[in-house]
Image 1 (cartoon, rainbow, N blue to C red):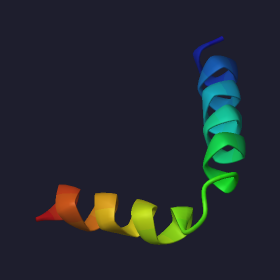
Image 2 (cartoon, rainbow, N blue to C red):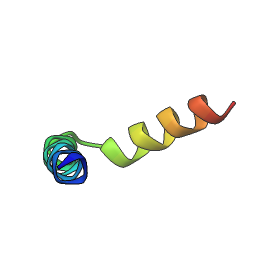
Image 3 (cartoon, one colour):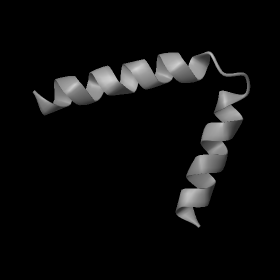
Image 4 (tube, one colour):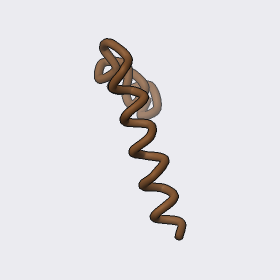
Length: 36
């Protein structure tokens, strides 16, 4: 059940992010900030 919910959230998030111009760069910035 948890994995199904997690997959649904991930799918919805990807769909939402795909509508934002430059979302890949934004995502990379978030990951880089989290790592440092």
